[in-house]
Amino acid sequence: MSTPAPIAMLAELTHRCPLSCPYCSNPVEMARQEAELDTATWARVFREAADLGVLQLHLSGGEPASRRDLTELVRAAREAGLYTNLITSGIGLTERRLSELNTAGLDHIQLSLQGTNPEMADEIGGYNGGFKRKMQVAAWIGDIGFPLTLNAVLHRRNLHQLPRALEMAEEMGARRIEVATVQFHGWALKNRDALMPTREQAQEATRIVQEARIHLKGRLVIDYVPADYHEDYPKRCMGGWGTSGLNVAPDGIVLPCHAAQSIPHLTFDTVTEASLHDIWYEGAAFNAYRGTDWMAEPCQSCERKTVDFGGCRCQAMAIVGDAAATDPVCVKSPHHAALQTQANTHAAQEDAPLVYRQMPGKLGQPAQ
Ligand code: SF4
Ligand code: FES
Image (cartoon, rainbow, N blue to C red; front, side, top):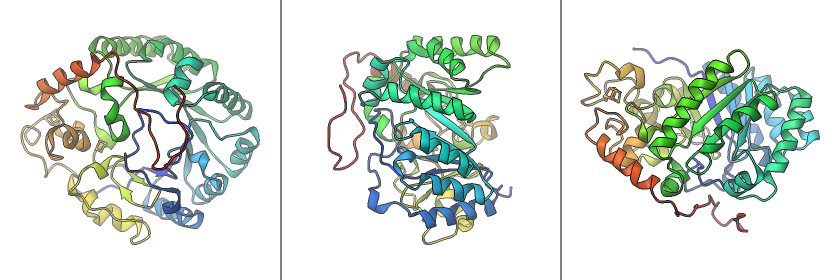
């Protein structure tokens, strides 16, 4: 099967972030500011992405607004012909900056929601006053008229706020909400005891989403990422490894997914040493788990192997210790029962403290 061109690229502009969310999927070893690509290099990467066939560019982080050249980067992305989406907590965006981003051609904003009230949001984000600032930013986004997606990351502590998050999406004029149950990669792996939803919570969230999809039909699109430790089949992670998307880390390392560096035997290329085209088609990391030839049983003979591509390689690595193993979420995995027991054990740790994300050498303590 020939390799298709990627559709989407996630550009992690920086790992710097004013928030300290314990569910962050950034790697535990984050890139320092000195290692970040400069404006001209990012602009070149955007052109290479467009030439490769990428249509959508997601500007992410960390907090992309921490980059002082964000407006220039958006302008460069639009000049390259990319549909450009900003994934942000809103902290660091002013009315003037949003207006400049609008002029530069930003197409869409995805705003994260740590909680539906200040108490929850500021505790989870580790940033006093963050919720108030975010609500102000949401109002400016609405005034300018950016198409908006609300991104609610849910876990054991805030899953009860899901109905309110759906209401807030409507109130903000969002066209879409992503209801994303926390995925345990990167920093979030340190917080499985503190954040793992109970099985009952996971089932209730699925029920609420199903009902809401019916009564909000035509008004709000709901994307749903369930609590997969409690599921019987895994997610099709990244749409299939090396199939439709790629990530560029702040220092220019090109990754098949945001957590790929957790697979120790993979080697990665950087945009400073190779073209995006060559990395996508020839790079060792991209070819490691592309397609289905690499699969062992039970995936190799499974009727779902081109549906979910065996689930998530990084999850197989983190839990089974073998990135080529069947995702242990899968009911056909020999590790499935143990994972479900493990999930229930994590979920029962009621008093587990939050481990806040910290950059190396970052000063200051998050709000408690
Ligand atoms: Fe997917 Fe593999 Fe499970 Fe089949 S056995 S459902 S391909 S993870
Ligand atoms: Fe890496 Fe799923 S996060 S394959």
